[in-house]
Image (cartoon, rainbow over the protein chains, first blue to last red):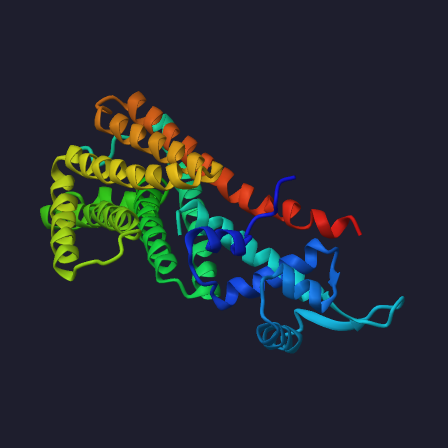
Length: 106
Length: 235
């Protein structure tokens, strides 16, 4: 199956580059979207290729900017991260910009 | 002396095509600026400046042609004043300045579009290049071939840069961009040969086609949303 665009993890791994802050944020949002809008913190850490420290740092920033929210799973009462409409709008905008940049080889 | 080569039956289309080109260039400028605001990549800013300059060039020619074709009061006044040699000179200066700005901004924008992927820009090289751009724009006022030759050279260099990018990325959008710029290059070759009005009209239509293809890139980027949210919609 074709992967969605703006997967900076794969892009940067192949180029041997470190991800920028905005790329990490976009990867977090993409991973949450791929998990249908909500994800467990451990899954997010693994799928977005983050350390525990970075995960806490970035998720607290994203919660503060209202791009994601922390919720609790009704089944097992475990913590979940959920993308907000603002987060979706931001990811949409970022993906368009990334696609534009790639067109020009940036 | 005939100021422009547009045949009378094509004047409306001529300005419309240039307005359309201006809108597309402005959209590309907006995208570049949005991109720069998000990730502070200076190359995005240079790309934006390139599109902005070409757009300003288009605007200069639109305004000049608009007054030339449609502003009857202005042209009637010219008719009344034409008896005085000095005034005729000043009227000439108005049109010449308009078309000179079009040439200068277009060449400057294309030069930045060619140079922006390079890692380091020496200020001496840039200064020298802009000197030649001004010379080309000035000389293009008398011999219009010079302007088109300069545009063709720059476009070929830009296409070559994007072809290298395409070989690495194999992105469809980059391929579309190359096709569009190639058609634009062909249109400038036709402009050079446009001693007759029909050839000029055909060249303008080719320019329109190239900008329509650029619009396709914008539409494709905006439609990328479908791809992004396909996972989310399954919920």
